[in-house]
Length: 208
Image 1 (cartoon, rainbow, N blue to C red):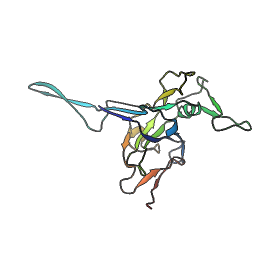
Image 2: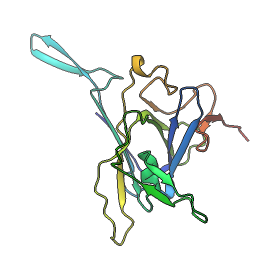
Image 3: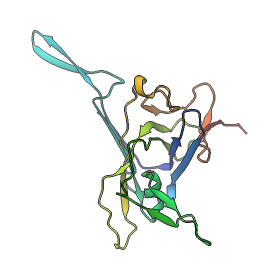
Image 4: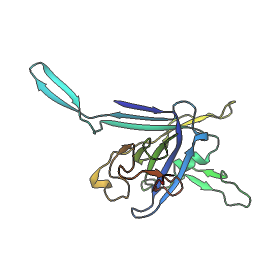
């Protein structure tokens, strides 16, 4: 099993498409909102093949496959907007004089959640000016699987379960997301590119 605990992050970007051909809508958790301990954890357990022999049955992992897959991000819950945006449950305030954090998270309002869609989640390395340190999990349905404790002396941390979806060509090949489950490293191996956290697109890096 592969277990990656990433603690030095530049940001975590959530990208979502309303349609396969549409532009990305994005929001990000920046470095100052990420927790100080383990902030990103990815667990990959490969599927194993069994083989009978004279000495009994043996197993070996099949590289590039998944028996189980999980991922989470831990961040500081200093306001509710990040939680709401991650769960796609955030309603921004519209009254005069509001700021970017004003609004509400509403859970259990009877909405049909079956067509909520999913996010591409990109974890960016701290010092990389391209995408060599990027981790992209292409399809995630985030949920809060944690206690929310408020009122302590320190800003509480919230663990967001990303609930990655394993790529299925029959279901996902035309959804506008990458045709894979996880990418570790360069977005484009021919041209150096960096994720634009505002547009959600990978732009070519201009060398100075």
